[in-house]
Length: 160
Image 1 (cartoon, one colour):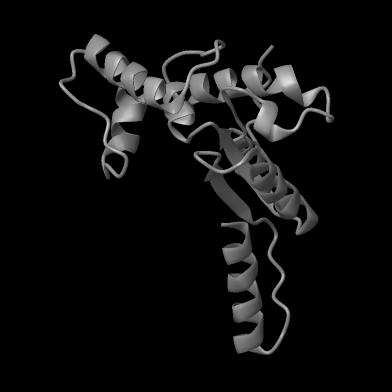
Image 2: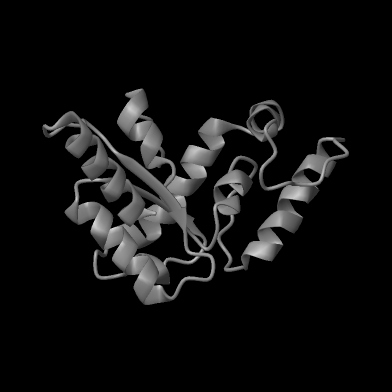
């Protein structure tokens, strides 16, 4: 994903025959089945290219789950999906999570909470962020997707 972003920027610059300056470039990806080294290298490559890495360890579904509650214990991505389904069921919605559901965002803002997702992700990330020696691949049930809102929203939400 990171290499693709670099290639897109290079292609745009080549076609315009000049360097294009971007204020912010976000690259969203998750660990999934990548090795720890591949995942950590992707985060490092983002930072070296002044991209903002919005990563999830272990999968993007963690960000979705954070719209409902904080998950502090270490579980796998299959368990995330089961928990997402449980949350919708608690809200009397007969819905099973589908990865590419075009209406998922609407469901999340009706039945979940963006503010709660930002708060939960911030809490979980801060457990690891204080120590820059901990690599992203070692940050269980952690996501930096909330940083997108810090960068574009200027709400400066401070969660303690």
